[in-house]
Amino acid sequence: MSIRGNGWWAAPAGVVAAGAGLALAELVAAWVDPASSPVLGLGGVVVDSVPPWLKDFAVEWFGTADKLVLLSTMGVVLAVGAALSGWLELRRPPTGRVLLGAVGVVMAFVAATRPEATPLWAVPAVVGVGAAVVLLRLLVARVPAPATAAAAPVAAGGTGPAPAGEADAGTPAGTPTGTPTDTAAETGASRRTFLVWAGATAVGGVLALAASRTLAAGSRAVEVVREAIRLPGAATPAPAVPSGADLGVEGLTPYVTPNPDFYRIDTALRVPKVDPATWSLRVTGLVDEPFEISWDELLDLPMTEHHVTLCCVSNQVGGDLIDNALWLGYPVRELLARAGPQADADMVLSSSVDGWTAGTPLEALTDPDREALLAIGMNGEPLPEEHGFPARLVVPGLYGYVSATKWVTELKVTRFADDEGYWTPRGWSARGPVKLHSRIDVPRPGTPLEPGPVTLAGVAWAQHTGIAGVEVRVDDGDWMPAELADTVGPDTWRQWRYVWDATAGDHTVLVRATDTDGQVQTEEEAPPAPDGATGHHSFGLFVG
Image (cartoon, rainbow, N blue to C red; front, side, top):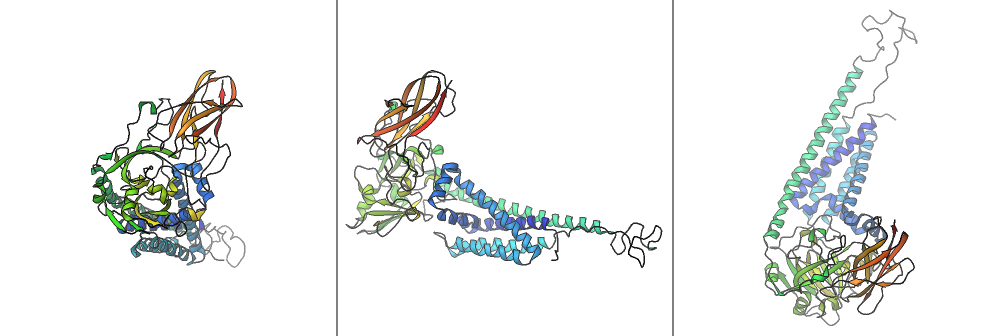
């Protein structure tokens, strides 16, 4: 088979062409709508399609960096595919262009069918991949030809080398007969031409990407609006955090988690930018009086403050996908009371601006003793954008996948028999009460320890029930009661501390908690899926 050029140059040609095309697509997306990014759309499909076991694996190993890992992996896969398109285009044109075009069709379809999408969302993919197809053809046409080895000069009329002095009069000695004298020069020139074209394309792609980021910076308008918001005072303020709520042990998780440190697990590859001026919440479904409320109307309602610990269902035993904050918001039960849920309703399907949904038991939202909030504030400031600005749900006692909808725009009163939240059809339980747990924070595994008093400390939680006690066991010894810190109520975790008289050698430390109903934390081990992990947190320590 004849090869028109050097395959080693064709692969990077495909990568450069595809990269420049995607950069152009990002620029167009910044103009159309940042959420119309073809790469983010494709990533959203991956997130939506991932099985529970793979989600657990990603969260367990990468934690809150799971999105960065996903996008990096996608980048590698797209680069390999782009290299393949260059290789194919060189050998079997127009196969490479057809491959890129097919990817473009998929990206355009995915973008146009995402939640909240419009037909315009397909434009970035069409423009970007269209440009990539053209660039691929131009670059592959300039791929340098393989270098040709020079043949020995042939004597006139013979098959062997010409004797010295018998070369053609017009041909320099040592030059192959019939071979151009400037073959090497032409090869060098073709390589330079290719590199100039490839370099110019790459620079264009970088400039397009930079321009897209500049345009996207316009979305900072929402951040500016957020920074200018002055939250209303709470008609029902939260109790003050008692001084004894934080035991002051170095390395122990603080009672209230600062906003920048609060865990974030969701399906949004790009944080939605929601302008409060255009935001509204609709209460619909099986209700007598459906209604819609605007941001300004929400701010005029009497607010409630409440400390609530939130926990992700993917949290492993001893994991850190759990944090505590002071929330400001309006009781969801009051919103539902205004709408008038019908007698056969038993679930509220909450929807995010990006289409994510959660199915929450209706009784958890209407319980007069449970402060389920439509929250607008977090630790004394408007919700951070990554935590749901301008409004989100906070429901004590339920895992986030069935309750903690961020960027919430609708509460649909319905039935479990008729509707499902985002994660339920993916194998997770429809109802997700938080399980009784405890964790050891101090000392960290591997910390050098000396014989004598050693402080063991951590946190325990049983949201909306409360922690009554924590016990610690070293090796096969007895369970020993730990000291409990104060708390503002049953909806938050509690710190605990135990001073152990350590002896030299290897030891295993375990912890368990008891809630105010008398339930003792089970030692039976279970993975997060389908309704939360169980087991005792333990690890080994060496005392030198």
